[in-house]
Length: 96
Image: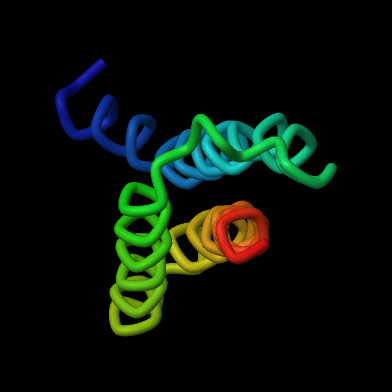
């Protein structure tokens, strides 16, 4: 197979690899949300890390919008929402 044929195959799989990576990365937040949902279960989480992570994911969403890349927007949208939930639970626990 010629180099251009391999490149075409690789580039055609790119969106699927990206979507799979986005799905798995987004799922990684679910156990933390489930742990943080009950009151008082966020003591071992860093508030600073959650703020920085949520801001970073939000910037990735903006970047995806600018580039018109739905995989970046969707993956980071789910991640930012879940990270934002954990952040809200952390703030709830810190303030009470």
